[in-house]
Amino acid sequence: MRPLLVFDGDDASEVTARERGGELVLDAAAVLAATGRASMPSRGQDPFGADFAELWEEWSPPDVPATSRPAPPDRPGTAGGARPYADGVLIHPWDAGSSEDEWMDFIRRQQFGQLIAGGRGRDIPVIVPTQFSLVSAAEVVLHLARPNPIWAAIEENPAVVLSVAGDWAYVPAAWKAVGDEDPRMGIPTTYYAGVQLVADATVLDGAEDKAAILRTQLGDNEPGSDVADPVEHGRRLNTIRGLRLSVREVRAKFKYGGNADDEHRAKVAGELEHRGAPGDAAALAQLRQRTPLT
Image (tube, rainbow, N blue to C red):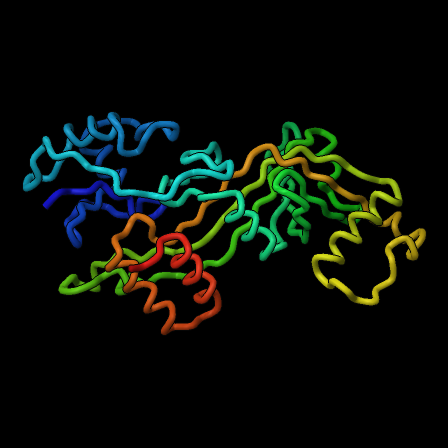
């Protein structure tokens, strides 16, 4: 058996290492405790690279030769602006966005997220749930009410993050077991997609600028409707302010079992299809699109 180093889940919730389906599942905390290290390799380093090999040499279960090294399986690339270990969010190589089209399609299907402005010297950032329109890979537009507290934070610091998450489904422990594996010992997880757009915000207060944003959002949400043109609302436009977000970094994560083999992913796919709970169809489509089952 060739051991494979796997961190199952983002929070490394496993407490011990054990064999499972030809894999050796290791918990970061267990490795650190055994080696006396203060931290794991930095996010900028290859998770299957030299630093992990050094950890493997320092600590390995009694029945696994210390010279055995984890080997990386083939994983999707990191095109589309996403980095394997982007600052601010953990993205394993097998979860990274594979193309610009992938994350843009996801964003456009969601059209709702959290706009986060840290401002300057604040203990807690301003976080606003909001509708928006993705104009291009480099631009997002939206509008918010004039009394919204985010304006002060943006004036302090125009750097913001638009965070969008969706297509999620809970995967129970038993779904992770195939063949003679004990379903009680499966590792539950959640499949989901998340995209963070790091951007510079420009506030737009001109009537025509705000009307143009509203036209874009109306075109996205009710195309072809007989709704009045925004300029017809006249002074009511004074109750809102517009925002243009100029995107400078994309953090795209699609966590759909990319670190599992075909047999285990097929088991989860079948269970998602059978259960049919809210979110299951979207998660199943993501799973099949990112790692087609043979």
